[in-house]
Length: 387
Image (cartoon, rainbow, N blue to C red; front, top):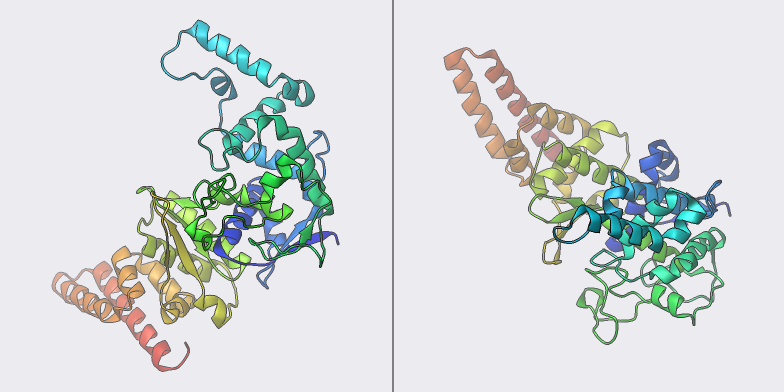
C-alpha cells in the first residue's frame, strides 16, 4: 500500500497525529487538505519516511527539524552559556559545541547544526521527550524513522496500547534503544508517561508497561506541537471523532487566540465551531457533533475535559446561526449562547432597542435587530425539531 491510513482513537493519539500534520502543513498547507478525508481518516504517504533527496535522513525528519528551528539563532545557541560570560568564554563554548556536533556538520553541512539543535529541543534536558533518544543513538533513530516507510499491519503482532493497531517492523526488540522506544514511559511524555521502573501513571489506569507501536513512537514526539497554549499557562486541544474536524477546529483556535479575539476556553471553543460552520461545508453526523470536546491541560499537568451540550453544538454549526453570532461579535452574547441562556439575548436586544428609540442611533437599532433575529432563529430551530 502506498498510504498509511490513520483513524481517530483516544485524545492523546489524536493530539499526536494532529501535531504531525501541523509539522507537514508548515511547509505545504495544501498537502494536508489532500491527506485528511471527509470520513475523518488521514492518509499518510509512505514516501514521507523515505530519505530526503539531498540529505541522508528521512523527509519527515527534515521537515520536523526545519519546523522546530524556524526563527532560531543557531550562532546564539552554539555560544549560549548559563550566567554572565565573557566574549572569550562564549567563543570557547561555541567551539566546544561545534566540535561536539562536528560529525553532523561534516555529513550534513550547515543543516547539521539545525539537526543537532532540533534533536536537543526534543530529547535534551527539560524537553518534552527527555532521554527518549540519546545523542549516541541519533543515527539509530534516523534509521528507525526511515524504516517506517515499510511498516505493515501484521495480525500476530501485539496490539499497540496507544492506537490499537498491529503495526510491525522487523527490528531488534532486545536492543536497549528499541526497548526504550516501545514501552510508554516519561521519556515519551514527561507529563503523561509513567516513571521508568515501578511507578505507574494513574492517567493510564496504573499500567506501567503500555506497548507503543513503531508508528506511534514517531507520532507521539509531535504531541506537544498540537496544543494551543493560553496566557494562564494552560493548554487546550479540541478532540473529535474526525481528523478533519480536529484539524480545522484546532487551527481556528490557534488563529483566534493568536489574534487576541477571544481568551476563555469556552468562548474559544465556541468561536472555533463558528469558524468551522462559516468556512467549511462539512456535513457532520450527530455522533461526531456529540463527541467534540476540549482537552484542558493545566500548569500542574492535570487534564480536564470540557464540552457543550449537543443541542448548542448543533446550533453553532448551523450556518445561519453562526453567521449571526459572528456579525454580533460580542463575547458576552456568545457566552450566553453557549450556556443556553437565550432569554438573556432577548433582554439585551430589548435594552438596546429602547436605547435606540431614545437616541435615534441607527447602529444600536441594527444591533438590537440582530439579537432579536438570533433569538427568533434559535427558537425556530429548537421548536421545529431541526436539532
